[in-house]
Image (cartoon, rainbow, N blue to C red; front, side, top):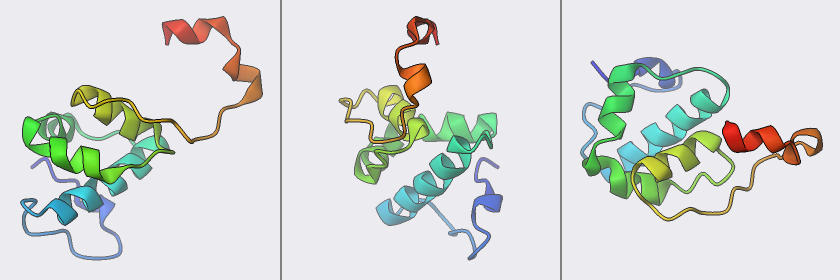
Length: 99
């Protein structure tokens, strides 16, 4: 099963993901975990990369999440400004071009 139910500690996971609001909520939970180093299962990544998730990715708008910006890139959506923390000692590192 691709749905990571551990992302729902506060409520029961949705029965299905056909509803746009349920998909956006799932993506918000997934990106929050991913940003803190909890990597999604390969099955989950495979699922959210499907074209049927494009609308939910675009609607999510988590501009402070690096994981969200990766999802936008995977779905061919135009880039949005990243509003997350940029550490000064890393920002000018020329090696970032290779990461």
